[in-house]
Image (cartoon, rainbow, N blue to C red; front, side):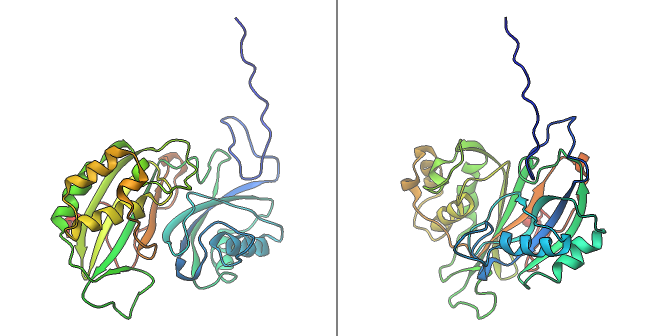
Length: 297
């Protein structure tokens, strides 16, 4: 019987480092907690046609502080118009800088819509995307007869009243491990549509309706598609059982409702405790509650 020969590890910038291996001498792996308002940005991922992306702005600022070219990896890319209060990134650099340089120094080079919240040097085995165990989003809805003049690009407005009890009943069908093909975008590149949703709470916070969802990972547009379907239930267009019917069909055409990006926030990324990353309030400022506290309001 032949034994497989382990492949030799070769370093790739910002790539995964197997247990027991180290970064090349002189390199440091730095993690940052990032907050941004996506209203005037073209999403997270750097693009050839649009300079105003979160990644492009961060790499430019980091390269200036590091005095060398810097590229980065994030926990999860967000679309144009989507916000984050706790995105996590990492990058490899030869630059040795104090923590305040990676926070205050980088912030002086960033537009007002992007901010570094914390910085920490990490072991080689940390990876912003692949080390993440869970991610959490909040979706903010303003249900009122007229649109507010404030925060127009930071919440989603609907003129229709929403039945929260019906929305919660519909949401209960999405908890657990399922094939979420009906809630993924057609251009989603994930190899598997199976995800495990561990929390899906809906509550009223002040003048807003807030949806909070946590899962091991998310498909492209998954949260916006879930929100769109639940809002349709809240408006009385479908009964709560329709959510299960949409899920069971495993067909994007079954639901076909995608909520706008404006009210969506990436609010938390959870990693193994061994990495000892800073914990931050999920936010945004409109929702000053810790994760899991929505239904206590």
